[in-house]
Structure formats: structure tokens, C-alpha cells
Amino acid sequence: MRFDFGSDNTTGMAPSALQALVAANAGFARAYGADETSTRAADLIRQTLDADAEVRFVFSGTAANAIGLSMLARPYEAVLAHHAAHVCTDETGAPGFFGQGVGLIGLPGYSGKVDLAALYAALEEPVVGHRQPPAALSVTQTTEYGAVYSEEELRHLIEPSKRAGLGVHMDGARLANAVAAGFDPKDIPRLGVDVLSFGGAKAGAHCVEALVIFDKTLTRRIDNRLKQAGQTASKGRLLAAPLLGLLESGEWLTGAAHANLMAQRLADGIEGRTPFVLAHPVESNTVFVRMPDEAHQALNTAGWACYQFDDGSVRFVCSWATNEASVDELIAVVASLD
Image (tube, rainbow, N blue to C red; front, side, top):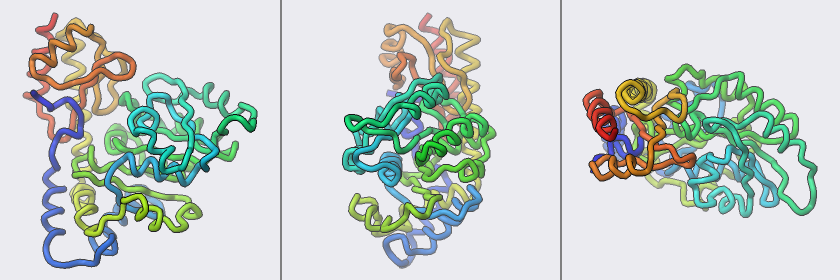
């Protein structure tokens, strides 16, 4: 089975990430994240975002999201998010687990972007004692359907949320792809995001993500919270090192730009050489294709791993490691399904 396009989690580590891991492995260093490697990686994240934020490294995006949301909502409150958001569909209730009962309210919107009218409707809902009122908004950049929010779109969502007293979380598992598509990461703190999950794994690291906290009033006993959640790495330098390598080398961004380019090549080939149509605009590293179940099954049978997404379309994901030959090979196979 070919896993090239099944996910950007199926590839290994990018060269700079692996080299940084090997370098960090030498000798002895302070434990539990108090080492020079972790400090340098955190500083580079602050530099990327142009913000004096608290940064901690965790083992997964789910952990970063769930712990981040637990800082913004109490057990009797809820988080607003797109109904297809990873926090709603792919985290096995982790926000509620880490938030001791925090609820999730799914909102509609095209290509994974929260619909502004739906947000206003949710914010205007009267608070009653029998429902969990919203206390936070979570947005994903890029979205689960590969769309990239503009600064203006995010501002129109965040400003009314802030006026209503909500905290704001951003799931940045594929933030690098959004930045490669033209989004300025420095807009994140400027827009008023309180907590960010800064993606490493999909950008070419191993399993590291960064929890970035802009609102420092939320950081009380953060290290205790992470320890209790099993997210404090004893050999912290080995967790942070791959992200340090990606950021120091620039491969965090160039790898994402390459992935975006490969996705556009795939999209162009599917549009130009196959009978199938794209389900969503291709703005980053994912391509969603409308095809009948029989064609999808035939593709799997032919040895190409890809799966049906929430809206019924079939998703293909490119990464830093995707090459043109593989893209062209996949296009030819999809074209043969006609």
C-alpha cells in the first residue's frame, strides 16, 4: 500500500529535523525542558510570531489543543468551532476530558471556515442554566479542508468573540502551510488569539507540537497542568530539537511551500486529465476530490491509501517529502479510473 498521499503524518522527519535531533542527543543537558535546545526552539517560535509568549512543547496536536482549550473554558462552558474541526471530530473528546466536561458547539461554514452569521447567532444565544454557554472560539489555520483564513476573515470572527468575552484558540497543526500560502504569523497575536497550537509534526518533525500562550494570565501552574497530563518530557531537548532544526534551517516554511506546490500540481492534473472535480479550492497542501465510492475503492485496491472525509470527498495530502514523479503517477492512476 502506498501512503504518500494518505496524510502528512505518513512521512518521516525532514533532514534538518533529524540532524537537530542527532545533535541534541550528544552529551548531557538539563532535564524537563530546562535545556538550551528547548530554550532556542521557544525563542524561534516567539520570533516567528513576534510575541513575548509562554511556549511549552507537547507530544501531540490533540494535547496542545485540548490543554489550550481547558485554559479558556470551564467545565460548565463550551467552545465554538467549525463542526468539522479536529477538536470536534478527531480528538475523542479530549477537550472535554482535559477540561473536565468542557463542551463543543459545532458551527457551519464552507471549506472548514466558521460562517460569520452562524458565529453571531451562537454569540447571541441567551445564556440559560440548562446549556453550556460558549466561553471560547477555536479556529483552524489552515482549515481541515485546506482553506487559508485571511487576516480580515479572522478579524471578523475574533473581534465579536472578544467583545462577547470569549477567549480565542487557534489550531495551527498546518500553520506552516498557511504561512507558505501568504498568511503572516505575526497577525496571530495582533488579532487577539490567546492560545496557539504551533504545528511541528506535519511540518517535518517527529511528534512535537508547541503550546503557545499569548495571554500570560492563563499560565498559572502551567507546568503542573502539563505534568499531570503526561505532557512533560523528561528529556525535553529530544522533543524540542526537531522543531528547532526546522525553524533554524527555514525548512519549516520551505517544506510547507513545497507541499503546497505539489498539491497544486495534483489538483491541476486531476482537473485537466480526469473526469473528477475538486470539492474545495486548493489553497494549501490538501486536495479534496469528488468521486464515487467505486472509484475510491478501486484506488485503494490499486494500492493508494486515501480516505473519505466528512463531506464525502476523498482527501489527498502532500508533504515536504512529496515529489513530482509520485504526483504524476497518482494523476495517471486516477485518470485510469474513468
